[in-house]
Image 1 (cartoon, rainbow, N blue to C red):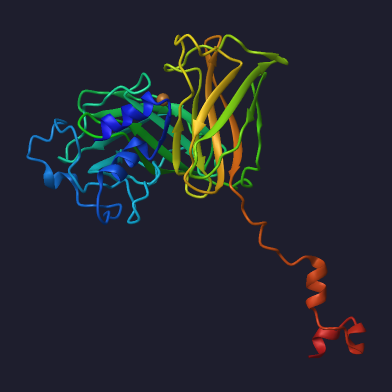
Image 2: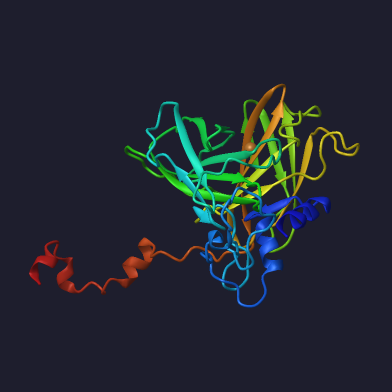
Length: 341
Ligand SMILES: [Cu+2]
């Protein structure tokens, strides 16, 4: 069911995947009480060859849904529907480019070697710092034995999250995630503040629109350079822009695609790129836009707040702290007062 559902979604122009279209497919396909995230392994329904010949996951293998039936956002699990992301190592020395290798283990326990091409690639690999400051969108190479490898250059020490966004042959779209650690001293930055303008290499990208939890939300990104609209964006992986949204707090992963595509007769190559995104909950989201111009892919970043959040819990101000102090007694005027008790 997943594939037709997914294609249907694309045909409608709702180019939003949260937890993969799999989530939607699972929600449609599951009846009765949905199992929790780690439903019985799909391997139990596998007759043996397990080589990507199944068009659909086994009924009940709705690893993409919570007990309440809501789809689980992508990227939060290292294993789903019997597929497991298995990095060679999760400790990566920062500050130098190195080969990072991983495999996806399929329901049959063997490395997956068959992938479907989505947006020009068989697998999209996103690495983001846990503080949501650093972002990179990479395309690893697949060797015949199911080992993916990519040059990875982490900028500094700290915690990172890596996402593999792919469609295995015989399975549904999914995004698996794993933590990576870069050893060394690390001072985490402040959480990103809401920001609708991004500058990169002389380009300014502005974002209009708001994210509404649970509803399709239109976002328009406008690219200018030196104050002039950029009207000759180049297709990158079949689109004028790729947008990844990550939820602050848990880094739930949302891959959004733009309205229209290059060459469809109605989609202009800038300066505006329009997306429809649906986020599953209130909260802050970091958005990273990849766009290509004059042969170079650049990334602009934004932060949006979906829905209302209460004001930060009040912390005692110095004034309040003073009020909480007992009224000074005459003896407190003695500078050694506290020692007297
Ligand atoms: Cu990609």
